[in-house]
Length: 143
Ligand SMILES: [Zn+2]
Ligand SMILES: [Zn+2]
Image 1 (tube, protein in one colour):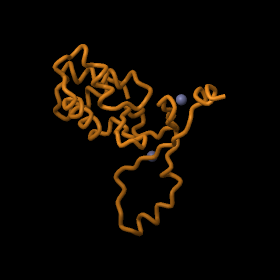
Image 2 (spheres, protein in one colour):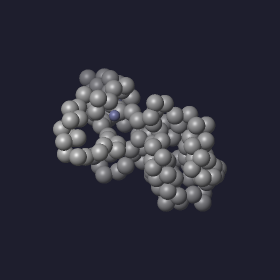
Image 3 (cartoon, helix red, strand yellow):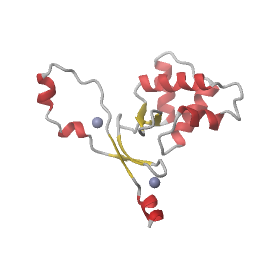
Image 4 (cartoon, protein in one colour):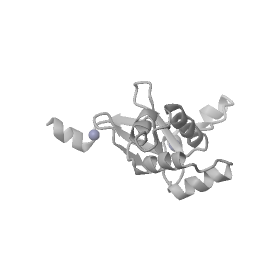
């Protein structure tokens, strides 16, 4: 997702584009990994000494609710975020070594027998699916 499109969507939902918010979004746009709220705060704190971790949490929450962030958990209980790709939601191959993540352009939901879920009278709103492992570079290092 382009930062410009994110700003437009935020405005549509009545959110102001504050310098802090802009900085958080720019940072997310540069990252090719899923990062934590603490990572974001750590990288911006030097330029915005008054920025609290809570503020970053709030902003990340807003972006997540507007479906602009993909959230995942590496299994350590910490939420990690990455901006979604152009076509909405994306799934990733996530490296447990260096934390890089690569988008895959298929959705496992397409391959599911959705009838079983319909039979339970369950309406699907969203889903998450990530594949964890080691990237080519990390595998090379281990050799
Ligand atoms: Zn790696
Ligand atoms: Zn999907």
